[in-house]
Amino acid sequence: MSRVAVVTGGIGGLGTAMCKALVEQGRKAVAVDYSGLSAEVVDKWKADRKAEGLDIPVYLADVTDFDSCAEACKKIEAEVGPIEILVNNAGITRDAMFHKMT
Image 1 (cartoon, rainbow, N blue to C red):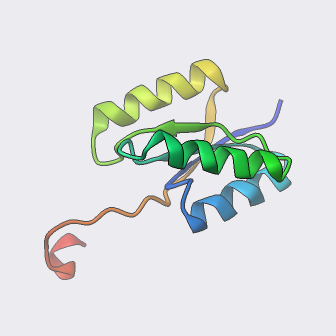
Image 2 (image 1 turned 90 degrees about the vertical axis):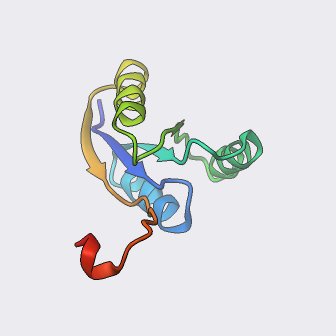
């Protein structure tokens, strides 16, 4: 069984490229993206991946919310398998000066 790799921000440009690269390396990629995405956006992304011969499941979660992330992890582990790789790619915006965020 291949190792499960979760990519946050997985539907974006970089996230999609990372998911594809992980699949090419023999991993089971899982895309996690913003819970506010429309079903149409998710369905189009999944259809585009299927057209490329890729089966990458998508889970929606708010990476700024612990409970949302914990719930997504439970679902992924129950439906796909134990998470062994995490790619923190999701971009978030905070209303603060950069030097105060680091």
